[in-house]
Each structure stands twice: as C-alpha cells, then as structure tokens.
Image 1 (cartoon, rainbow, N blue to C red):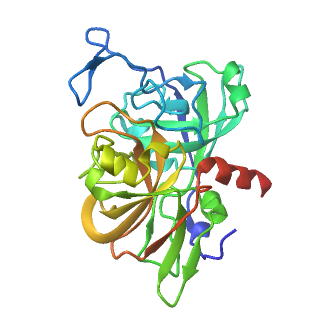
Image 2 (image 1 turned 60 degrees about the horizontal axis):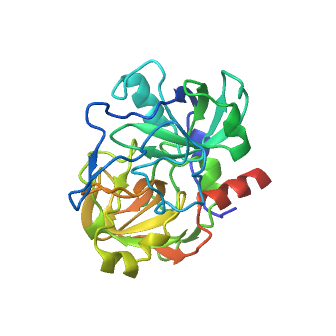
Length: 299
C-alpha cells in the first residue's frame, strides 16, 4: 500500500460489456510489409492467446502486435461505435472482468491494457481458465478509474488506472518537492515513440516503441521488455494527447508485442503523466502487472 491520498470515493463505478474478439486477418492480402521491405505472414491482434501472458517477453515471438491473454471488444458493435467507445474508454487497467456467458461463466480476470486503432482491451486470466473460453463469450466489467487524482499532487494526471491497482503500486509522494516516485522497469526516450503519437487523447489506446535502431535498443535494454512492464517515457507529455515536451515524464504499461511494421512496436497505455516533470522514476525489475495483480490477491 502507498501513502498517497486520492479522490477514489468520488469516482463512478459503471457497467461495460465486451466479448472475446476474433483475430482480424485480411484474406485478400495477408502480408505485413516489414520496415526492411520483407512481406511476412504473422499472427496478430485478437482472440485468446494461450501462450503469451503478462510477465512474458513482449519481444521474442513470431507475431506482430500480438495481445497477451484474452482480447475483447463490444460484441454487437464495430470498433468505432459509441458502445465500443464506452468499453474502451471507461474500462481501466486492473479492473475486474467477469465472464457472463459460456462454459467459463463467472471466471474473473483483470484488464491489462488498451490497444488503439483496433480498439481492443486485453484481459489476463490464469492459463488454466483459458481452455473453457470461446470467441464470443461476453464479459462484464465494473469500470472505474477515469478521473482518479492524487489530491496532494494535482499536477500529475492519472488515467486508465483502477484505484485498487493504484494503491498497491509502490508510489512515494514528497510534499516538499511536489514529486511522486514511481517504480518502472525501463526508461524509454520519446525519440523512438511511433504509432499513436499526436493522438488527441490518451484514455482509449496506446502508442508504440519503435525498435529499429540497434544501438538505442541495446542502450535502453528494450529487448528485455515484457507484457505488463511499467515503463517511463521521457520528454513525453500525455496530458491532453501524446506530444514531445522536454523534461515532462509519462508512465505507462506495455500492452502488446513488438511489430515488424515501420513506426510500430510494443504498445504502451498511459497511466500517469506530468508536463512539468514532477514524476521521479525508480528502476525496479519487479514493476510489472503480474506482480501487482498478485498483491491485489493478497489484499
């Protein structure tokens, strides 16, 4: 538990529903053209991914934008509909998702991230629970978290974060400096951030870490990124969209795998941002959703 006061008692809890989404693949042209010009056929977004979970590498797969665990979106609407928008925006990382149809009914998982463009949510379940699930199974999420704020540190904005998950993060606030220390596994320079940059909001998707420069990849140990890692994007302000701003800091979670496509890579969903740099980062290899969800079980 951390010692930071929030406004969680003012937040609304509201139902949103999603269903396990089929993996979308183009039949006419299944190829992805890599940044080196090579046509490739690879698994990607959607479905139930049986062998990639939070805590696993986000890099070492023959896959492109693969989403760990279970992928959901609104069952009766396309990705741009208002119903899917409510699911995508209001559900937050750490919210519980309860299956309400099918053989896995009443099994409970937790939201691990948001994927822009396809507008998917990812949900983590114990591996043994996946066998009873089928594409189309519906889940109910009691969404809560948008609007969460630290009452003593108003300059730092929070988004996409479940209040219970916030409380088990090892955050340390310093009222004298006005800064909050947040543990992360990696720091990432804003210069390598790609797809999603410039998007007008940060409450419904992610943006991607490009991994095409070997020197930068080695310097920042980007080949060690895992699904669920909490990372810091340096010189990036996500207050009202994703922009470059010197000295600002944004904190997010790695939500999908690397990509061969130019401008793409492991995706990051925003959790915290400070336009003035009032976030101090503390390097911690255990700053991963897998460990944080274990703490939630203990509460």
